[in-house]
Structures are given as C-alpha cells and as structure tokens.
Length: 353
Ligand code: GCU
Image 1 (cartoon, rainbow, N blue to C red):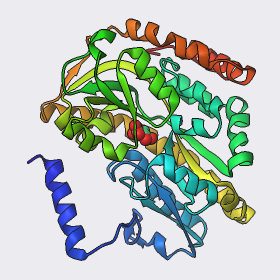
Image 2: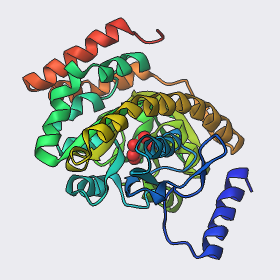
Image 3: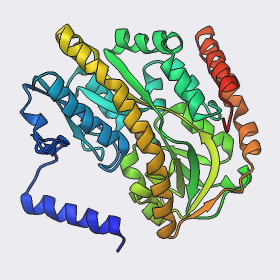
Image 4: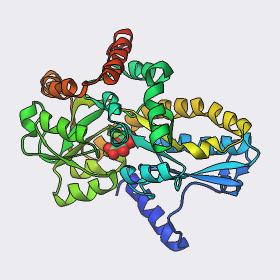
C-alpha cells in the first residue's frame, strides 16, 4: 500500500470510529505561536467549498486565511474549509454561493462561463505564454475589473482572487499521446463547460464533462479512458493508478478563482471588510508558491506509483488543432480587448521567461 493510501485508509477509519459527519477544517488549529485558534468559535463562520484534498496548497492557504481573519476581527469571523467536494461539484456549489447559502468557494475558470461567457478568454487553450504573463493579467484590475464586476451585478458573486492552477495535460489508460491522432476514440473527462468539450473534440478525443469527484470511478470502470488535468490532481485523486500514461500536451493554463457571495461581503463593517481584503494577497502568494512545490511532489509520487510521463508530444500540432476554438471565441469587442491584453502580457513575459 502506498503511503497516501495508508493515510487515506487511516483517515477513513478515524472518521468511522468517531462517527463524524461530513465536516470542514476548523477547531484546534495551531496558529503557529502555540495557541490554538478555533475558527468555528467565531461569531460568524463562513463555509468555503473546495473540490480537492486537504494536502492542496489552496486548502492550506484558505485555512490560514480563516485563522488570520479570526485574529484580525477579534473572533467576529472565521472560515471553515470543506475539501473533497463535500459540499458538491463546482457547477452546483456556485449556485449556492450566488444565493448565499455557501459563502465562499474555489472554482475552475471554465465553470464561470455559465455566468458570463466572456470568461472564456482566460480558459482558451494555449492562451497564456507563461505563469508570469497570467499573473500579470490577473494583477491588472484595468483588464479584469469589468468582467469581474459583471457577475457581482447579475449573480451576486464577487471574485476575490485569481490563482495559478498549473498547466493541464492529457492522460489515459491506453497509450502515450504524441500526435492528435493518438487521442482518436479516447473518451476524456473535461470540466463542465462547452468550451472544454469543443477543445477536446478539436484535439482529437471524445469529451465527457463531469464534476471532479466522479472521475476516479469512471476511469476505474472504463466509462472513461482518461482525462486532462495538472499533475497534482492526477496524483492526489489517484488517477495515476487507473490511467498510467500522462502526456505533456500543455494545452491549458487556466486560473482558479476564489469567490464570495457579494451581499455577505457588503454586510461586513468597513473595518472588518478592509481587514479581510488586506489578507487576500497573502492567500494568493501562499497558494501559488505552494502549488509549484506540490507539482514536483506529485510527479515524484506518480512515478513511484508506476505512471509514465511523456514529454515527447507534438505540441504545435495540438495548438493548430484548437485554433478554430480561439478564433470563434473572440467574437465580440469585450473578448477582443481581453485577448489583446493577454497578448501584451505574453509579449512582456514570453514562455521560459
Ligand atoms: C483543477 C482545478 C480545479 C478544477 C479541477 C477540475 O484541480 O484547480 O478548480 O475543478 O482541476 O478539473 O475539475
């Protein structure tokens, strides 16, 4: 049994022994100075929905944010983080955030397209030349301001931050992928959005949109042949066990967003809200830095589990295949402006910069 599986089994056993219901992060976290901070004792405890594991840097950064918020507001606010898709798929939970029954969540970029399709620009294949170019775009409120404001008005959702979420590649149980033809007939899971379906079809595969939590079982039972994701998901969700060929198509670098219900944010006192917002840059820094380390650890762990990483991929052929998606998506002035802004950052921070 791998170390990860031993831990997972032990955690499952503990959950059963203690009879715990689904619960989030919370009580008794060591605040770093030896004092335990029980964020669930705050006057108001927000729930933050997350669809990945407790080892993920975004989870750890959110827990830190909850503790810092508790301290900054003298216990008026705390955040409890619910990992492993416990509160539902991103496509479902985002509606709860819109209504305010869940206060916060992390969400992958493509799922935002159902609220405002202009978000698609940041989810297109081969859009960002480098992580630095992507970070530049999301630090520039002149570029993102109107787009983000559009869903505050229409859906009551505020984008608190955009985060680096790795680079996505294809993996499957059948063979290494070198050319688009190698995807022929392979059924691959994609995130829940039309753009992602179209992308995989153009790349040569058969697309199957679904929430992340169902993917392992679908791979195991053969309903899916593979999926596309970064190395951390591949390892943390044990996809490496059931789809051993991971190939570096490098087709996507899409952000994750940290979202919050707009009214709940507005209801805070000015002082508390400012204190909260001042903590967000630390979350971004912590999550993004941690992500890079997490990738390296994930690759090593997957290799140990027997996965094969293939970097001999005709990336240019895939890039050419998806050009129609890029062209047909940049079809209004708003998207054109967003696209042009990305190109400026790409020039400033080209690949390998
Ligand atoms: C990544 C991303 C998530 C997304 C997931 C998925 O893990 O960070 O936000 O939900 O991929 O493919 O569903």
